[in-house]
Image (cartoon, rainbow, N blue to C red; front, top):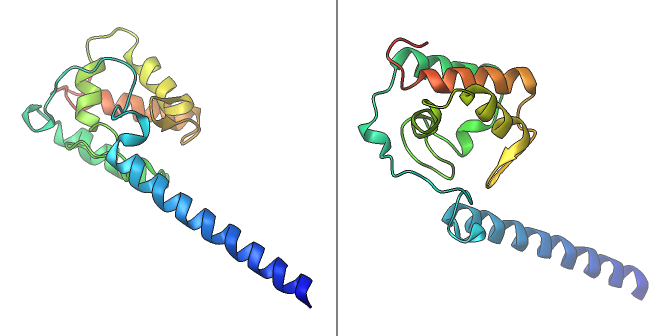
Length: 142
């Protein structure tokens, strides 16, 4: 009988430890302290999301695409506001002038980048997301 009591207490302690650890991880990840207050180890340009022109059609397309494919992107990103991850318009503005921007963003989505884990979207989804993201700051959606 004492052995069963010990097993139940041990399992309870493990479950409590997992719950506390998950709670602390969630709080640290939201605050940015988990990664030394840096979302990415790469230098960031200071871009304020609210001052960037946003293509409304691309914004709506991106939101619909994410929800129709049941992707979890909007848990950490928003269209025009920095959250845990950078705003989509900030990403679009940052990579818009680079010739291989679609491949670069696709790679970040598929393989992870900075604090963002990889494997959140498959290859086709990551390509589509990268293409739509780059259209956000382009008036003509090229």
